[in-house]
Image (cartoon, rainbow, N blue to C red; front, side, top):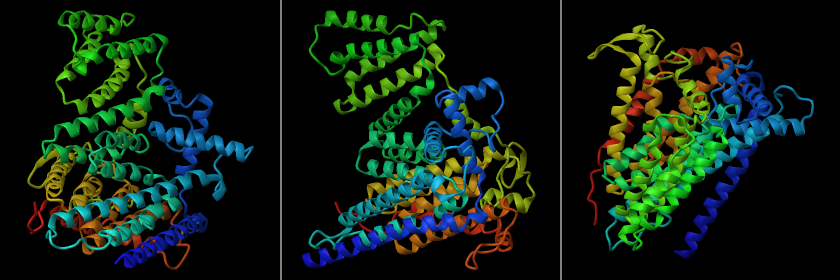
Length: 555
């Protein structure tokens, strides 16, 4: 048995090593071979904004845009969250050091290599996380269903985990998006998958921090992140939700801190606020303190944290005192929650500088809000969503703010209808995640990954590239069975076709560079009708995300 185990481990390791090597080589070859159909404006746009951010200061560029009231002369407006802006700024500085004299993006591989390697590393880390997630939940399910007198199978979940990891590593949608289109959707994958993995280990604070970092790279992560909260709410594990939110707040506040552009008065108040919170530590951790000292200490903390130099209303100036009151109430919380309480308080104090001292918010309104509101369109071209399908069949306007006559609903705004459908489906997935977690069932991974497909299908303002998220996350479906894993393969292929069609359209409908790729005419023939196939996949997965498996659960 031991020899067989060693042989299998060596075989899996060999396959993984060879796949990693070939994947790295093929990525470079793919980028080089598809130069004729590559969409260059996005990566060129990143270079331009990186250059302007370096000139104005990466912590100043958002305010410069809002103060001027106009966008700088780039291909597309700036809608990068802070960490993504920082990444392209560092890359642009790297190009000036290694390619002196360059004033615009160059198509050579070496010029864009740092960003492309970012895609490669993100895909590799995500593949490892897929393997770990599938194996973890396969072991849990086997332990929950296997009779006590039966020995566990050898390397449970290893082969299905390897297949899932391979699907992500060689995912056609991610490859087309990252190396033909030249985008970075894959960047958020390791952070969401990492959050699910850490949450499965009950490390909720770290999971929340992962979500915050991923969202500051690609804001679309916030559309699917609520599934982790709903999973715990349906199990009535409020402590886990609070720890997740504390981690999310703490990481988000630390990331945003340099973009708030605090004045000396605001920074001084913030340090005093931390000192005031420190005064309450003995009370919060239940040290024995004479009662006559409690009120003076609390009043002293309020006096220290009071924003004396702020000119806002007294109602707003009382917010620090309210925060200190919440910290004091931590005395009645379980001891394990106290570090999370203080982390959330540190984050809350950072965010309080916005209303109290006019901390800058352009990093949020420009980096996150602008992308949400800048276009009223339902979809862009080559978007195989259900809204695109219905808009095509019923001739609805391509405007999410227009009233439409929907069956069974009547006159309603399209955006409200779409959001309502998505929220309902998200609640179903949350309930399914709680159910399968309680039963230690691998269908849990269907429930937490499905929102990525659902929001693409039903929400407005979608682009073909957003199906890449669902394609990547569907790699975990192999945990629930080979047949369900094949549905993830279908999503990945369709996602790759959408990105490919967009690339053809934006380069004037050029023919494919090789006979193995479909032509633009073929892709146009299935656009958007292939969305019906995505709907069927989503409905099948939604059933398995909610329905319990017919088996007995061993105690």
